[in-house]
Image 1 (cartoon, one colour):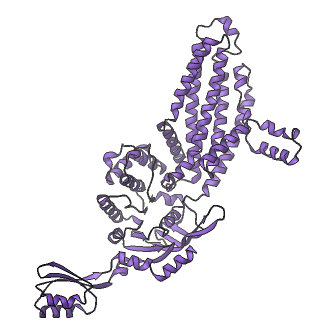
Image 2: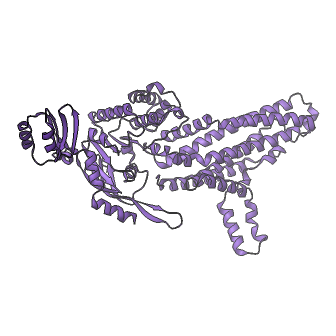
Image 3: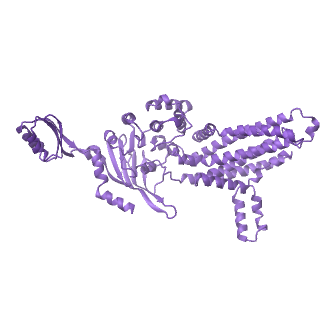
Length: 322
Length: 268
């Protein structure tokens, strides 16, 4: 395998379900994926897609049914790799009898840091994730969002080369999400590889260089966001002023949506065809003038829905459910 | 090693913060109250009764800690999902098992040390000002160092029970683990009867089953020298050494089995 930060090959996980008559449930089906060093990689998919299972396989919290994976060029579970790795589980829970500072210092001790170094790391990281003032509060008094911040801090206690974050924005308010986004970009700037799962597509859109989309345990697609979304304009948003009702009426028949913004000002959502040059000609001839003309691009959300509802995925879903 | 010690210290800290050591207060109240009452009711037997009560309570309190905390050492981590963050750190799974076990053994050691000290304090108080004639009627002196032998073997027994609880908790539910551990504790005190089972049953299969249980289950009766110590009988050092070695070997086997099962578990 390559020296990618993460490389999986046909990674598969089956669970036995049922009480008396056990049957097989495939949570992850032959996942082959490469995450390159230094990139921010988004692992996307709806609930139940197998994202958490894949991440747990990488952390060796569950053992693969078949296939394999390497992290930082070493096999899963290798202690040297764990020393260079940070992990945030989904909806993390920590020992509620400890303070945030004690928890981080405890985890730092597991990496072999001295007591004083552990304490300093704990304090610095809690400041970095914005809960330095609460570091001596017992975790049982923390809100879900604060616990999420503690979870992110503990994932960074060893200054990892690679961080694996399972739904890092979960439970965070808008300010918290902004802080975590900024933190992820800072990690990337330091040269850290970030692999995170999410079903919040706007986060992936603003952070990731590449994404993979998973549905029902299968990898649907993977690639650069720019390749997935570029040149996929699906229409035009036209804003005009000084247009007569008759002129707007002639456009409205072709428009997907027409909104009156104010006196003589309209916003129209038009299909790709006819091309914008023709539209502009017709407009100026009718006495209106152009305020703005923008392509309506496909968002990651559109792309995501298109991928996870594709007939092949639906067929796979039926096959697995059967 | 450092990581294992850090896990053990954290278990001890959890016990302290979850007020497990509050049982010492109950123990002290029981001893002081009993010594006062017995002092009022009996003549000449009070020291012996307090020794009996003290050692019995030490064993029982320790047993409840060993079982009820022992079954949660691993299962609570899994149930609350704190295991995910923990196993992501550079530790082997067996280190988690050993560290957790070590932490509870440390808790038991502190508990037993404080209980033994409290027992000696109460006995010293009872022996204070007693005439030499009354003292001669006792089977053993009030502050008999032999009590420490009994406490030491109680400690080995509790270490073994903790290992049993931990072993069951690596593959079954907490309730079932508790039931099985108590079962092993009870049967473990009657293994000699299992050995002689063939003398009282006709069924060869039942006798074989009883004999198999005799070989598999720990013989806990050998750790119980409370009665000998209370009656001033000497417990040979060789006996203590063999019983301790037996306990430690059994514990090691249970920890290896627990680590083996734990290392193959999926944490869904």
